[in-house]
Amino acid sequence: MNTTAIVDPRAAERVLASFGKQHAMRLIRANMPVVGHGLTEIHVPHWEGVEQQHGFVHGGVVGMIADSCGGYAAMTLLPAEATVLTVEYKLNLVAPADGDLLIARGEVVRPGRTLIITRAEVFAVRDKQPVLCALMQQTIMAMYGKAER
Amino acid sequence: MNTTAIVDPRAAERVLASFGKQHAMRLIRANMPVVGHGLTEIHVPHWEGVEQQHGFVHGGVVGMIADSCGGYAAMTLLPAEATVLTVEYKLNLVAPADGDLLIARGEVVRPGRTLIITRAEVFAVRDKQPVLCALMQQTIMAMYGKAER
Amino acid sequence: MNTTAIVDPRAAERVLASFGKQHAMRLIRANMPVVGHGLTEIHVPHWEGVEQQHGFVHGGVVGMIADSCGGYAAMTLLPAEATVLTVEYKLNLVAPADGDLLIARGEVVRPGRTLIITRAEVFAVRDKQPVLCALMQQTIMAMYGKAER
Amino acid sequence: MNTTAIVDPRAAERVLASFGKQHAMRLIRANMPVVGHGLTEIHVPHWEGVEQQHGFVHGGVVGMIADSCGGYAAMTLLPAEATVLTVEYKLNLVAPADGDLLIARGEVVRPGRTLIITRAEVFAVRDKQPVLCALMQQTIMAMYGKAER
Image (cartoon, rainbow over all chains, first blue to last red; front, top):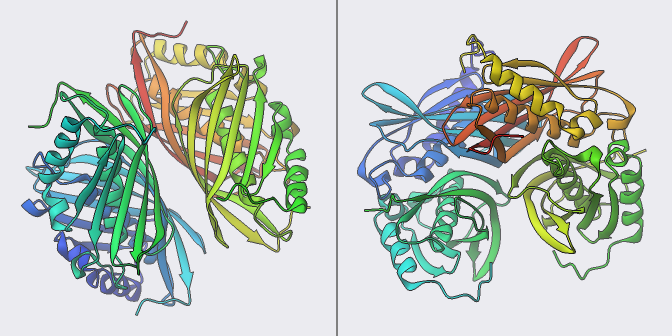
């Protein structure tokens, strides 16, 4: 993607409104500080509730925000009457999520009218230093005429 | 897998002890009512905290329990000194998780000393009727000499 | 899939006609001895031309027939005016393809009007004994009104 | 990867020697014109033998060279006593391979001692213009003490 392109402000608003309605994102204390053109970031602070048995952030939470930021990256490119579905994704977990903050960055790598391919990277930030935890490749389907209510 | 084989009771105990230490599983109100030989089930009741914007269970939660039940299915086959890591998984989401209860069933399809291949299916149960929501294929790595503490 | 269901004979004919037009399948000496309802098999004899550097059948050939038998399994369920596209697949290679014959068996695990999920297993047969080489999960898209010519 | 790093010339030689012994690559008329540090390219000219039923290059051939260039990209980073195995890969096919030449470019995105994550892109070149056909994410395993003979 040409990441210098400016996101349509109404598309960004729709993405943030949809994200704001997801109780599951609030449950894990996720927020979305970045919405660009074909690009979003979801951040999760490290807190006890999202840990696995070794005190790292649970791999399931890593997958959850990777999947979501990819889908919302696709949604930034779509018109108001369209919404997005995750068809499938594939995630490699490459290191434990050991840090104070988790950053998932999703990006459209291949736009399309119906099918959109995205990728995401998830980093654990520890002492300001990001360490790659996960890599995702994902297929998103655009659904037209089924705008989110 | 030969699902008539009986799980080693100590392996089942180790799996349940590990699961019990995962705060993230408690956060989403997941439980593990089934631990067999190369097989586990994770259940999550539908409650507001795990919903997405349409009132279905969030796809990220579906992925979270699919990933976990596959990993624990692999762990049931391993000796006490071994633990498991998710190398990667691929998940197809085929229907919204629209039900009162989510059931993820993970199964080892190809055991191995180092790499174990599992599959999982996730069902949403509505009025007792299970509807398939997701299908996963996963690569698990066994780590020896790094037992969970 | 209910594998006792009988395949529509015209669908089977369309599948075999399409397969017969694929030069790449002839190049590797693949044949399709089984076409059932939501199910196909592609076989490749072991011959020098498909080998990798250790004398096993090349993993790329394993992937090629896994992908194809999944797509054709989906096509057996579709009307004459529809054709199939592979959206994506994920393949685990679990053992070298060491045998006299390679058998790929593809099966629809989740039918759908637009998206169809299939799985495939590939076996190497040596001294009559099948050994599992590969496991695939795949997303197929049905295209209507674009029948193959 | 830092693609300005220079590949170890002996690693490049080992990669090319291994590639040269793969009959299946010769069968499809593949060649490897680029071997960099954590990076390889496999090219296949469009010829009748690799076509599918519509006259495009067969998706199986696209997958075959995507898988191979990722594995060889990993091998460029390894010492002489190590060899590589594809654990698994996931491939999105995004456009028909409609061109005179197919170029698969594989790159290591996450090195590791045992597990190496790679990605590949496949382009069809038509009238000098590359069009993206496929995107792959792959897990490679390094095997030590089992050098290729």
